[in-house]
Image (tube, chains in turn blue, cyan):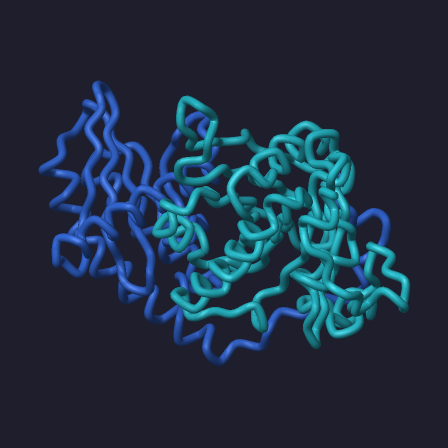
Length: 156
Length: 230
């Protein structure tokens, strides 16, 4: 199973608040919670016009490839992955429940600071994810009213 | 696994296009990207080699309003078809919600198709999944080539099971059958979220086959590729 299956509005707010606090302390630009299947769960900060679906899919793919490398080296997982650019950098940190914390930061801060605060927020996010998973286990499955299978529902 | 966000009222679903090398998976996504005009679509991302062979995956995101009160975001992925990239295929299948299995209709590709279908089932098991749990549709692609295998042969080879899947004929390069395949997969995935799902979609054991197979040809004698070539 990948990630978590649902997020309530309260869960989402709580996670986004932690992400915002993390950004304020670390002075990073953008941070998000994604799962290893490429789903974007929650985010905070600004990436301009970047397509966040693509960003999440590529981040998850990149981390998955690294996970396979780790396995072949006899490691259970690399807990963090860092891509260094000229002006912008990405840090990905593994969370529980098949999730990732993806952080983009620029020249205002440095990897040491971002990694330090990322480690702190990871523990809090893991707790929130655990709570979300427990809620999900007892939640009523989503069932919407109405038949959506009409002509308008067709993807065109 | 589908992800439901009650705050933004959004459902995210992952559909993977699977099949043998060069069967037309990437072409499906390229064509969809061109054909889809009404749904909000993202950029088509291809992680490919210089020779345009898929190295990791292709990715296309579609936002639709197919479910009342919710935005549905379909994340479409392809896998690399070449045999050496099996680990990559397993990674792309992580968290999959639905599958489109693309079959190359060329006679010479039948062994590759069968191997890929078997490989799909093995890789689903690696992800603790199976075709019984994951909705899937079949797409018989390249129907315009001169030596295409007959539909009844393809049905017998790939859809000869108790719960027959929806199957579609297509020519992905021209766009024929591509949207129909995606819509069928989308409806199968969304059916479980409706209180009044369309019986034609949820009745996976008795699907309305879009490919017309005469009753007399449901279990035909299996022709060999040599028969067709001859």
